[in-house]
Length: 404
Ligand SMILES: Cc1cc2nc3c(=O)[nH]c(=O)nc-3n(C[C@H](O)[C@H](O)[C@H](O)COP(=O)(O)O)c2cc1C
Ligand code: SF4
Image (cartoon, rainbow, N blue to C red; front, side):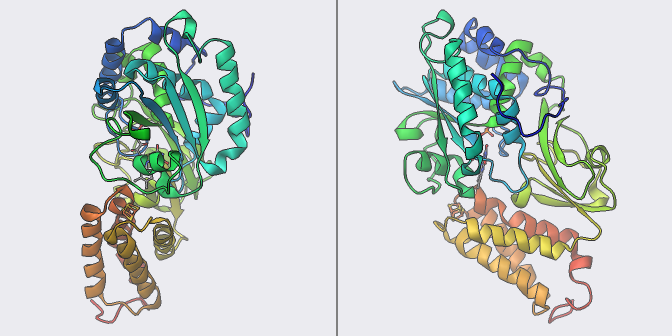
């Protein structure tokens, strides 16, 4: 059967968009011992594509080692970071990779249940994904005694309810359990105490989609792409001022300059890497590389040309964080409001430079004192936009009370 696609695009890429035959990942995995799969994923150097870059083999090893009769594989398909839309493409056009990655993860860690936490706004793809799961069951790639082995695995899809923070893995688990989507204290980590208190792997859609390729083509093959510390390829969701926005698969290590050429961006003055919680890179840093050793990112790339007002960009990001903070901890709940107020003061010219510097220090405190990644990363834009675009932002009329 064919899963609904929004637009038929011929996609090319070194890993995820390379040829793959449905079912072959599961077939190959079930012939291997669990330790051999862990070895292959480790050899590949696969790191989480959801943003944090945690080594996937380590997460799986910890879950495999945890003692419990019940374990879960959760696919994080919340895709809430502003400017990110690459998981949507994987789910719509490559569901075999996502689901087979979950089955292989289940087999490796000793879990018989997978759950996809699907972004609420992606409800339109729910029925076609469920149809696809039924097809997999018919082909014995899912369900009981998969491909004649003793391994059972099922997948359910759970629809999210629209909060950005629900993409954070512990808030996601709370939401799955029917509670308010609020991050938990860590430790304990989901690998030991996750969904319903059981050991749980939470992986991003793209991370899981890399696994069938690694198992069929080898970890050695996978790590030939990318760099030493960032192996494989990455999907980038490119939006903003360019002729060819869209989802691109590129090897890690690609520079911003190379990416801008590919998407035909002209007169670019800033590239926001990693969404609202990422960093804003100015022209004189366009030689920087996309990868864990330099610009780590979940894949959101927003391009701004010379006509854009960077203060407006910043204000937009800060409004987003004030709206999306779950309010549980003070640094994030109050801090984001203060950073937004500071941005509005600059807009009106009522700030002082002394106060803006104090806010930057507050941002640094938020980065270390906030309970989850939302508050730890929300000051990134505030700090990087004010540092990298100070001449533009503090131009005439916005000089501030102390005019320094
Ligand atoms: C506020 C917030 C939102 C997040 N949203 C997502 C998301 O939409 N998708 C995702 O895969 N990870 C998201 N993450 C990261 C997850 O907490 C987690 O690290 C990830 O799902 C782990 O998968 P990986 O190791 O495969 O990257 C988010 C983190 C934070 C702090
Ligand atoms: S950092 Fe923000 S989103 Fe995370 S727990 Fe604290 S208030 Fe909630």
